[in-house]
Structure formats: C-alpha cells, structure tokens
Length: 260
Image 1 (cartoon, rainbow, N blue to C red):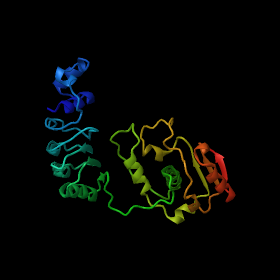
Image 2 (tube, helix red, strand yellow):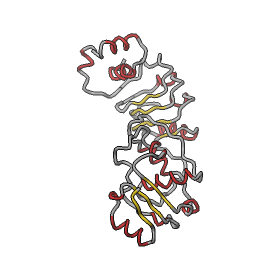
Image 3 (spheres, one colour):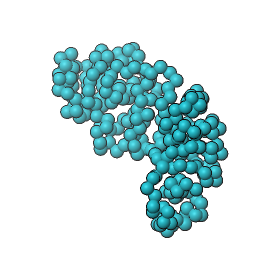
Image 4 (tube, rainbow, N blue to C red):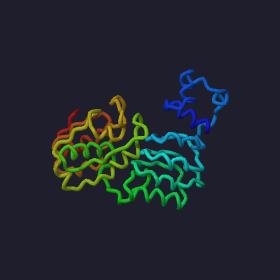
C-alpha cells in the first residue's frame, strides 16, 4: 500500500488491525514512514476493503489511476489530484456522490466525465452548467450580506453545501453562492441591510466551522451598492474596513450608515 495512503488511514482511525496497532503504539511507524519526504498519495491500491468510506480528501496526491474507487459505493465527497493518465470513469459508478474536485483534470476524456457528473446533479468544482449570474457587487462579502437578507425573507433559496474540510474557508462554495441569481426586483425589497462578524447561516455555508474571530467575512468595499435603490439604513461591522469615501458617498444619498 502507498505509504501516504496508509498514513491517511491511520490518521482516520479506520479499523484495520495493522493500522489500529500502529495507532495504539502512538503512531510509531516503521523507518520507511520516518523517511517520507514526498507526501503525495500516488496509489489508491488497498482501499478496496473500506467500502463504507464517505469522504476521500487528499490535499496531496498525484494519481495515475482511481480505479479502486469504483467499489466504494458510499463515497459522497471526493477530492484528489490526478495525472493525464487517470481514467475518471470510476466516479460514474458512485451513486451517492455529492461533490467532486479533481485537480489537474485536463484531457477531453477527463472533462467529459466531470461534465457528465455535473449533469447528474453532482457539485463538480470548476464546472458550471449554467451561465454565471452576475452580482452587481464587487465585494463577495457584500454579496453574501445581500443573499443572507434575501434568503431570510424567503426570496432566494441558498444551495446545499458540501465540505471536504469544514475547518477551512471554501472558495468553491463561495463562488457557488455568488452564482445565486438576484433580480433587481429582489434588490428593490431591501431597505435595511445588516452585516457583522458572525451569526449568519450564509457564512457557515462557506466555512462550516468558522469561529467568528477572523476577518475573512468583513465587507471591504461598497462598490455596486447603488443597486440597492431603496436602501435607507446600512449597519455593518467593522465599518473601519470600508473606505471612508464610499461611506460618505452612501451617506450623501441619504442612507444612514451605522456600526452593527
């Protein structure tokens, strides 16, 4: 078995006697583990007994084949990096797939498989079947603030999100949210908009386990906010992250701007 694949199984605590013995020993591994310098998983051989696996997420991998995945029928989330020699067809045999990320998939045959998965309803990172909705707002966080308001009013439906790593900011999920269509009719319903450093469902659709203690979700620009034609009150925290001239321009429109 690939050394790095074995380490991944140990870390996951999967119930194979050999792996459990190593884990019980405090991950004291044979010398070949200590000598690992290249952390890429290069082979999935040996995964076949783990038919109950639901998540396969290798931040470091270079795979010529993903054939062993064909028998892992419970897989819902797959994130790997492949070479141009890899046949992605085994993914088509997985009935419960919800999201797939295949880095470096560049050949026509590989792209054809990913397109087929997307047409099946699987979230495929980098593949969008519909024309991307154009948000009028340059700042992604302002877009999220508006989506949060509209979804709270029942005017738009936020998509179901899936995570490979709930403890990381997911740029693909953010991009998916930014494609949610908002009509001018929707925007014209907004008279008051509030956004602060935590407590919004939409934030956790981008970073599931975000603790609210960092600034990734701070609005830093109001560019495009003129699309909110009936806006009367904007409450944002922290206001200091937004340029003063943009705040003053909004106040000049008669909009009350306050710290949330």
